[in-house]
Length: 511
Image (cartoon, rainbow, N blue to C red; front, side):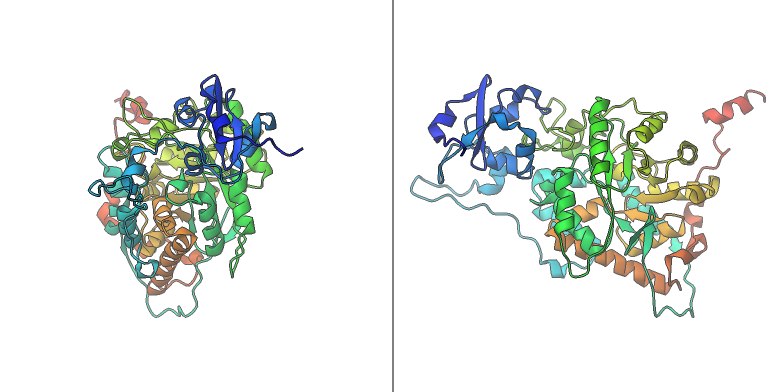
């Protein structure tokens, strides 16, 4: 039976909390029963009550989400073709983008079309820094604050990048480097370069296709993608986009899934089992953010309450502290997660490799080996969680100094501050198997999949150049001897360097 055709006037009558209809893409839904269960609260749906919510919905969601989430019994009908309905008030920063306040308009003047700051042509960008510069002038205020921000005074974010320059290279010469390969593997999956796309939340802030576009780019570039639990699209849509993408030279790259454990463990179990059934190749458990960090640039820009994740169900709302997307949308995270939960994850997704993302000391690296995980990511969340936590390249050095056996037991990845091929080479020499580049790929996403591919290719080309200059033809040849770390070695703590650490108290009590 064809769906009932409803007039805009009929839909507009249902604009109350206890009788709430709205339209999305011409379909009318009754959300009366759903609105009170909405993870982000009532406000975002209530402001769309009796109106056309397509614009608000489409900013962050794919077209299939509402169809798969709302029961068919709550699908009330459709609008007639060409129907015009009232729309909710645009968000403040959206209005600022759309109209120049210096331009006055009267009722006889058609509205000024939206204008976005211009950005340089993609072909003119030749370094990672060029992409960041372009993003700084063309992202929306909220997108720039969310992507670029870091915790409090930004010391860790700054040191993540700066300390790579303190480690210098020791090139070997008169080596035949006519043929060089940047290929490697990640959890036994081949990849064209030792680069992966780490979990990045809410990519639709940057591009309408968000994580789907990232997936297409990763397939073209031959690098893995790790999908965030806070992604803008359902996992199935992201996987489908990558499967359906047919680049000239396709690569069979894996897709991983990242998890913040939900306070309601049943929600996490459901997500994990679904992800495993859909074919993800590993679980990345984020462990460096039991609570969201304080990102002041993000707090200062008020959130649009329409923003949210269809995977975690989290929603952005403003509160007394500000409007930080990362903090507000991370309110569901379970701060009680501990080492014993590794066994729970094993039971939930048996056979799926587990990667701990957020290791920051040699002690926890050893603990991860003891827990039996397959890999670890040395990460401080890009400096977004705890300011003055150690730069990740320093953690690599700490592992080399105190527990080099870890590199033989688990794969070690690193992220944070990587913007040059020389940075990648240095990380690999110190034992990293691959590097994650999060912010950078979001800056590339400013230009769609083509921009992400170009960003990856720039880094891969710089890495290849570095390998040739250092006399390396294959990544299995790299080792710490290619580096001079004397400028920072004195900053690396040893096993017994600090008399105030708990594991030394028993020794000092006997003195």
